[in-house]
Length: 228
Image (cartoon, rainbow, N blue to C red):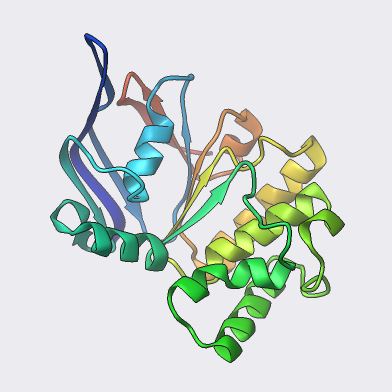
């Protein structure tokens, strides 16, 4: 079963008199429980693709379906619901609020979904436990290492139990040791909970730690291979 499906997906930008086809007729299927990397040189379209998959942007033409719903047919408010309910995001900069504790940061997506406080707290603590931070719920980001902040960001992405987790250069701010720990955690989450995860990365070590590598060039899929 495909969690994500694109058909002839195209995103065109205008820069003055220049037309840029950032994504150019791309067809991609991501099955439930996959762990894949999206790689390619700068300007290849991989981050634009990620934004289209996560409903952060809308296609010029073609379609994106997430968990059986074609996003092009949805209103802006319905797209916002998809982002909140179906997709979890992990960004390079972590985007944690410094005034909030770890558990309060993880609770944020549930606040937007109007989940009541006792249930929010229970689910946030459960998500922190999944990423190995059950002992740090009251620590603020400044009291956590870079690797621990990344784990909080992952817990926040998982707390809504999304169909798909999208990570955009998630190890860009991490050293090699924490990058290895990150990929071990991601692999464990993928294997134990069948969490579907797509990672945009420049890091060959990260890509080779997944099960599938989709290489993008000039907005098109150049290769799509299983990791041996």
